[in-house]
Length: 421
Ligand code: PMP
Image 1 (cartoon, rainbow, N blue to C red):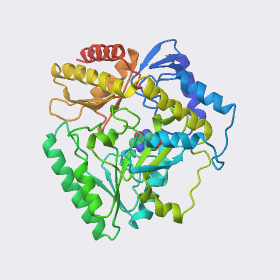
Image 2: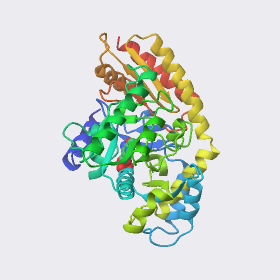
Image 3: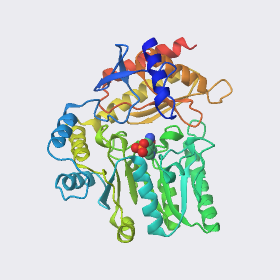
């Protein structure tokens, strides 16, 4: 499309170098509604990729709440206002009782950064344990625990990775044993170096490690080991949080309560707001000793949007929808996978699913994943690829994705897979 190409040329002349745009032929977007994006080419695209508009693009309840607040008051966050307190009470009620304090930031990265500072100050240690292909954000501290940014991205000092969970190739019962051995050795390494153990930081469905969901509960023994070594468990809920897995929070699938939890992306349905939630105990020392101030974190407009997001999740029963439509998608993906020997593995929790491809030798088939992602885009369905080798399709739609949308996705996937034979 020449108009899109002209736009990309203009983009490249003014925007700083950053991530590539998605798709061989990037989609220029004009507007969004629910699960649909309207392209500048006049086509409608089914958005099965985006976890920011958790209640759907341009949801009228979010627009109304944010614009009404903007017309009333918006300012930095050092005034005493009531809505931020009411929202905090409501948000914390979705967590286990022990998690009873929240601090607002604007981005997930800032919240990750604050979590690391808080945990280091609380424990007096420096060492951090992370997964091999983790992504946690953009600040110096967050990028320092984000090996998925590539081999040229330096990890921070005292950061130790544990091997990724390759549930496509390692049987579930061996996954847990392998992770435990890895965490034990990470703890030893940090204790021997004198860094000590600050925390293990994990996204409970290991999104950037390729959406690793099995076996449910595998995180609990790892967290026990870290606690025994004097460290904390920081749950990165930026991806699984706000109902995506069918539960409010991803750590619930593991029957765990974190010491600190980082919230982000879907929280304001696109209006920037993120947060660090934690036990009062884990945050007390930092709060007493160090001043923290975030100019825009939890400003009135962001809080109004975030509050409306909780309204819609509850009113439209989106957690239940994520569980139901997610199950339907999983069953459909399994059926497609059973008939296609290029599909190595299918997995998912709620509306976060992956289909992993392997070649005849069992090696990750990144090329096929890319062909399918681009083929789906050409057919009007937006998904992406994930995992260390980008050989797994990543399906992560807004939580208003319904059974008709799921059928369309599955039919399109079947057709595209056939065309790549
Ligand atoms: N943690 C995870 C798991 C993420 O996926 C992201 C964003 N992709 C972040 C943290 C950082 O959030 P933000 O981009 O809002 O800074």
